[in-house]
Amino acid sequence: MFGTKKNPATRAAERFFKERRVKIHFVDLSVKPIAKGELTRFVQKFGLNALLDMEGKAYERSNLAYLRTTEEGIITRIIETPELLKLPLVRGGKVLTVGEDAEGWGRMLEG
Image (cartoon, rainbow, N blue to C red; front, side):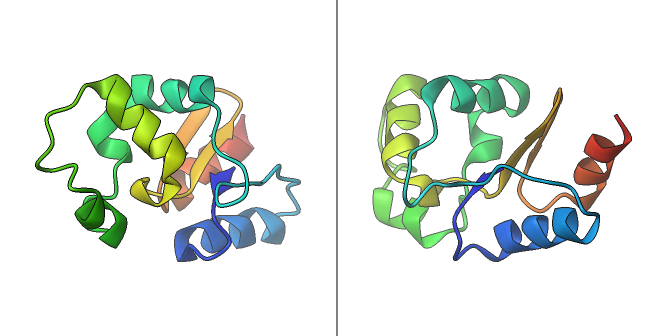
């Protein structure tokens, strides 16, 4: 699971898995950036726009809505500024979820 300790959706995901006694590997993106390959896996599944938190303050401050940049440029920005992401990003086996997605988390436990 990738997220930040301050993010409410990340805390909800952590709680979801702890209540079900599922051991998680948590990567705090405010401490350690997400690996480019890992981020690419989520981009391939959902598309870049689905990963961006376009309502967030970080997105507004970054001016990404107005910049002409490549997908590669945006990915680099996301790695530098994880607040741009809809958190948490959760991977369980082959199941990936973005944001608060209790249904998707449940599917991870089924497989």
